[in-house]
Image 1 (cartoon, rainbow over the protein chains, first blue to last red):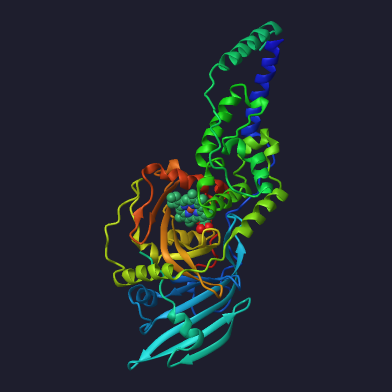
Image 2: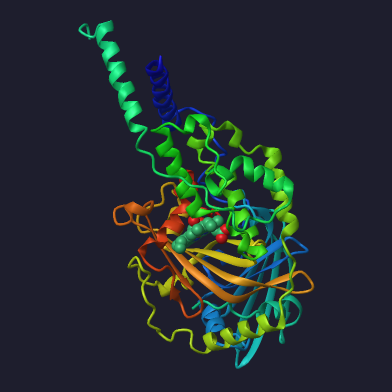
Length: 169
Length: 317
C-alpha cells in the first residue's frame, strides 16, 4: 500500500515536472520586438534630428512630455566643450518633444508616445555677425507652425541655445 | 515490448518506488531564519506578497505537501534559496523606504513580464498567481509613493561642479579601466544615435538609449529580432533635477552601461556582453565578472525581444 502511494507520488512528480517544463499552461503577457512607430518623426522636416548627436534631455511633469535636444556635429561638439552658448556658424540644434506613455515593459518608466513638436535653430554668421533662424513643426504629419529670424536669439530660440550639454564622460 | 508482461511492470514499479523512498534521505536543509526586518508596506499590499511571493522570497517559507517529497523538494528548495538570495522580504525592511519601494517597482515589472512568479512554480501553485486586481493594488500603492521632491541647492551645486570639470576637459583621455568581465570602455558611445529615452519617476533618473551604426541599420531594416552580431547599445542615466514648475532637467551623470551582441563570445550571458561604468569618473561596476548575473536577471525576462527592453523609435534612416 505504501509503495503504491509512493508510486503515485512519483508518477505525479514526473508528470508534474514534465508539465512544468513543457506544459501548455496559460502563456503570460507578451511583448514583441517592434519599433516604436508612433514616436517617429513624420512630415516634411528640413533635416532628421534623430541622425544627430544628443546634447541633453528634459521632461515636463505638468505636460507629461519628454524632450531630447540634438545637435549636428558642429553644435554637439561645441556644447560638449564650451560652457557658454555662442554656437558657431553652421550649428544646427533641434528639440524633439514627445508626449509620454507608460512603458509596458517596465513599471514606473515613461517612454516617448507621439511627437508633439520639433523645433530647429540654425546658426549662421556672415562677416562676423551671427543670425539665428528658428522653426517649429507640429501636428501629424508635422507641419511648420512658426518661423522666426533673429539677430539676437529670443524666445524659444534662446531657450534652446541656452540648454547646457548633459555630462557625457 | 512483448517481453514486458504485467509481472515485469511490478518489478519496475517496485524499483522505482524503492528509488523514490531512497532519495527521500537526501534532503538539503531549508531552515526559516528569523524575520529580522520585514518590508514595510500597508496590510493589503503585504497580503498579496505573502500569498504570491513569500514562499520563495522570505524567511516564512511554507512548502505545500506535494513540495515535500524529493525530487520535488530539491527543485523547490533550490528555488527558495535562489529566490531569497535575489530578494528577501523578511530582511529588506532595514533599507530606506525609497529603496524598499524601488524593489517593489522592479517586482511589478517582473510580474507583468510574466517572469515572476516563476511560470513553472506558478503552474504547480496556482494560488500564487497575481490577479489583475491584485496588480492594481500594488501599482496604486507605488504610484502614490512616488515623490515630487524638488532638487536641492546642494544637488544643483555638485552637478554644476561636475559639469564645469567635464566641459573643460571632456576628452581628457582618461584611463578607463575595463569592466570586471574584460569588456573595455567605448568612449565613442556619445556619438551613437539616440534610439529612445526613458524617464523614471521611481528612481528619479532620465535615460537616453543610444545605438551604434549596426543597431541603427538594423532598425532601418526592421531586423531587430534577433539583433545582428556587432549591435551595441549604450544607456546613459542622469539624475533628474525637478524644479518647482514641474520641469525636469538632467543633473549629475549617474552611469553608462552597454550591451554588445556577439552570440559566440557572450553565449553565457544571453548573447550580449554586459558592462557598466558608474559616475563621471567612470568606475567599472561589479566586484568580479559575476556582476553580469544582475544584468541577465532582469534582461532575461525579455526573451521575446532578444533580451532588449527598448522599442527603438522608427525612422532613424
